[in-house]
Length: 513
Image (cartoon, rainbow, N blue to C red):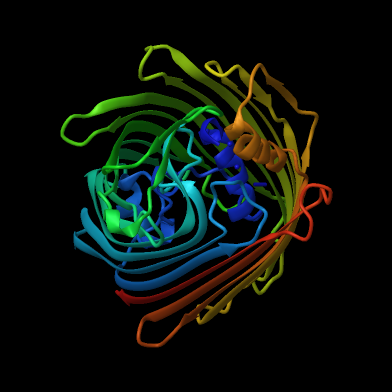
């Protein structure tokens, strides 16, 4: 259920494939987080929760708490696109807390340390080379990156009308630095800011409705310092502008690139029905992003502009027919359009449009002691089309995913909770369309490999366990483990390859009544 070179960096299919790899069928509701998508920072760093509307904080959190968390997210394997790393390990250590200053005001904050180890990354210097921006900086080496950074978030929520209207705001800030472990020792620095705001309305037990917005400004500064001639090495730089024919430079001085990405999003979310029998949860939003790339440090030279527009939605309907049997219907979708402008000719050189929709059905069985068993099935269909207008290349890749999952919950009467789930997905590629007017070495070495990746059928099997232990002194220990295994099915293209991932989250929470 749940994702091109240069121009394949489009937002939608990354979303589609990332959802397939990183999310299980147990929650088909589509949740889009810019911090995760554009920065690669897991929402586990934000232990306060991933709800984008800060106005819900006061009604969602009834008790003060202090939390400490440790998160590890890693993957490895040969089944990946050329510019994806062969292996990556993310470690996040976070502390957070929440305090009610009165019945109508609450303040929460979190602080985290981020460490990342990457190996076998080919050419590109960018943290997230497949988000959509076709203007990339690269060199001819293959190696690892090491990252260290800190990030923090503050959220505030207040009750504006007694038990009816709530308001809230949030600030997220991240700074980090990473360096390439092999020559030419490229350094990448990030400075990222996101500001959120929102309103939430509760109408008795019938309706919850929220509206929120977010503005974000993400900066990526890439620099390769002037090297020592005694090293007898000359770096070969690539300035990628699409799906073929990059600019090739033999470095004799330092190279520097600044990518400034600014965007905003609007989100509408809510829930109808809170009587425990029937409910509809929904969310939908729009995001606009513009990004400019410049080279040259003190005397910047434009390297192109890129923009993206994204519309997304999700719906989750649940109905209990009686206290023991119920069902759920879920649906989510996205539409994404992107374009890029050439830095020298001020004309569009890249065009992209994608569309995806997912639907699922689940049956819920609940015993008298609260145990719940839920099998689910789901189907997802995706199409995307991208065109490199400068090099005369068109690619169209439709696909579909069919999957199932089973989840078993064991509530422990407030002392021990356990949830086990397992599932499998199959991605099937439909007939693709590829047109090339002219091609060169970069197309043959990079773009062809990407095309083979997107035209490859694949299976994913995953399992997940969540455990929570409550102690008498108001301490709560939570452990979550998820493993996924992706295997390509086109043996003539990918032989004996796979892609495996493991995510572990540990949280210790002190609840203050």
